[in-house]
Image 1 (cartoon, rainbow, N blue to C red):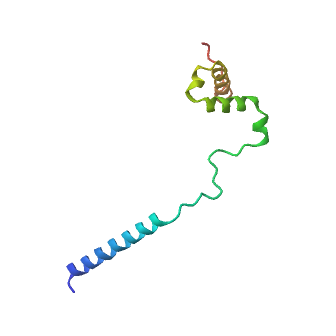
Image 2 (image 1 turned 90 degrees about the vertical axis):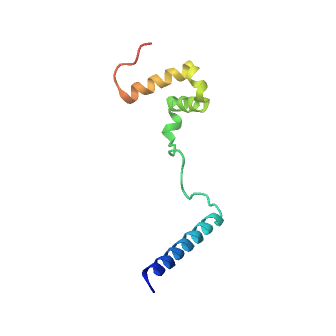
Length: 90
């Protein structure tokens, strides 16, 4: 066999394997991820922290939280606690 024929056979085998792998992947039933958590696990101390509860409430409000004075206040306190320094004056 010459080089061209071997290259063609190799290409055909490669394409056949790629198609087979694709078909197997597409026909496989979806499985739920095992042990994955989308958010950090909350400990008992997180539930006791009123600031964290308020931050979660603001997170659930979405865009409306930008107009909520309680959310603006807790965000300011959280920034100060995280970054340190003097709070911003508005």
